[in-house]
Image (tube, rainbow, N blue to C red; front, side):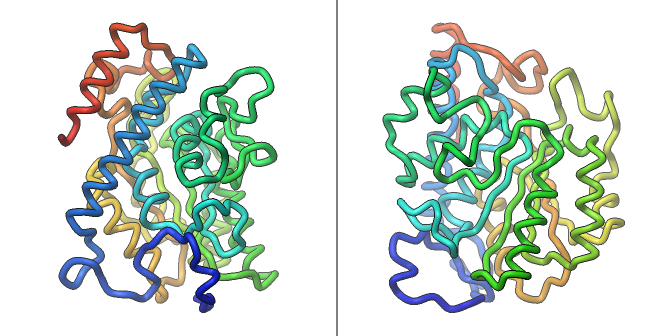
Length: 308
């Protein structure tokens, strides 16, 4: 990695640098304090999602809830970022295919100082930059405008290749996709292309929550064995419990720090759609919905009790 001056590190989110050793023992395992902080941030993501969808009167709770720990680990620990400076050229990039989960990212961006927190109060309102899907032309912190699934990995690969060809600062590109997104042909075109180009700076994550818009993923189009498919396409593959924030963080730190890897990396995160709210979990009908006041109160209570 290119060395940075002290001024380049101003406001930067701290994480283990590439090639570094550890925070607990001889591993990349986060300390108990960091783990507690990340659990708190995942809870924050879920609670803010409920608040913002209350403003919009409809939204994608469960798609956020399955990814909350991953969002927290990336933005509050693993990714190289600078608070208040979403255009810093040395930052890691992030693309998301399941753009309907952006309602869980916007509170993070506001918390990191990328835009005023008051923007959140106008979520999806006429004239607001914050819509149901992320728009990189309007929202600081968004690296890729998504909505139609299947494009995020191609875009992430383009960022990696652009970095290589233009000699920009060394950074990682993280890409999150839904498991229903694995049914899109463009994903696999990008996968084989990334392996061909030895895109080792590319780290993809599949939110394997098992459900898509209209039912169970494997009932609609079976994507297993997912790990073997990605290995066959030339990727390094890892699996993790996507709701164990310590394990998620440890794995993400480790793959980000790996200077020896000569291929792109895929992380299959086993998650539960709607995690944190019992009556939403594994219920396809909650893919898009709205909580009435009594249900919202129950959801908030369950989220506050999660890993308490």
